[in-house]
Image (cartoon, rainbow, N blue to C red; front, side, top):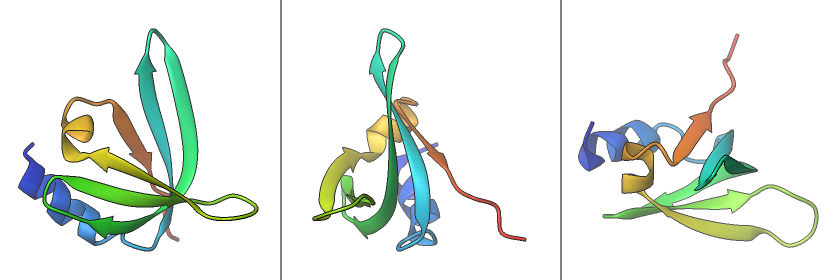
Length: 77
């Protein structure tokens, strides 16, 4: 899997709610309920869905390649 392929795959999910599980190392994880906002050359921006002001986070496509980030998209019926 390469960066261009990942970016192409994520294009179809822009604006759709998903859950990201981020591996911090040493069996520590953070989960975020997010919407993918923008895709750039080397990074992508997500908006965390929670009460109050929106919070934006930036991740690298290499995080996906290295399996530090996992996406959990809800299946549509």
